Length: 432
Image (cartoon, rainbow, N blue to C red):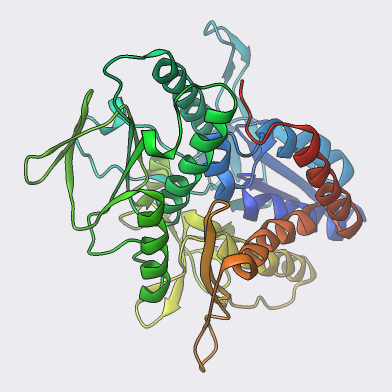
């Protein structure tokens, strides 16, 4: 008797947590075959990519090997990028894999599925702004974060060697959501440490960060009190916060605003808006919205095919009153938990449950300088505003909860202990 095959594409926070749960509930007992597909060999928690970009986090230490994790948690792993879908045959096509010289190493493959879960996440939306793709960095993946870090280190080296006519190192960030705000603060932390590690003359006075937001305030998706607190802290650090400023073009020398002003910058990063991968809008008739997100019903099944599910940032899931579930890590975590139960129920012939998003609040880290946010955002009595050391503790706990879902309590405890040891024996920044 052939057991059902559950195929999950995308090993982000939601996808990896899902296959880990299904591996223990179904794969271990031989009730289903579970396979994860991802184009990268390792996983890093996306909300911490701003720390990878500045070197505050060493991705080589914190990454999770998909293949090693699969072996330990009773699922399979396939390295590859999704290229096509045949819904009538229930077949997924993976693109060929090429080496660095363009030679084909692995040919295109077809994977059959009984149930398919698309957890492909999102990417930055440049809204077709001229020059952005050519001149700006993005922060959607570990590779992009590493490229930004290497670019930052090269500019810091150049800055430290210049003695005459030296001007501040200028970095422009477009988009004052959580990524832009957290990266702005993390850059000042990095500048202070880099100055101590031999980059002569570099400190927070010699760093100029422009945080540019088209809307009237930073952190537009979060309560105004949080945004105001974050704005004050960024201003203390020296960040030039520029709300109500729309970028119309990116050039080699900087960003052009709608008013015609040129904001000169040595490094530019685009973190404004998100969209799902473009190929989803042409995926064998599956319904998508204007952001390429797959339209799903309450049980997270796609509107066009009940055997195909979607979760996380690539899913357009209604949350009532014309609203949709926001693209946050906590939403992906909650979706993965429900979908693990729904897929088990499906195999038993039991009814599926609808997804109900619970907003547990939002926290924004301003590096070691501060943390602000609110907790229990779904309570009718209102949310609890937190900042400082308490908020920082809650912020760190979010990552630990993700690790707990992947590794279990004992392994997570040991990981936390190793992190503390690394803080003692390793430099505070990755310097190579």
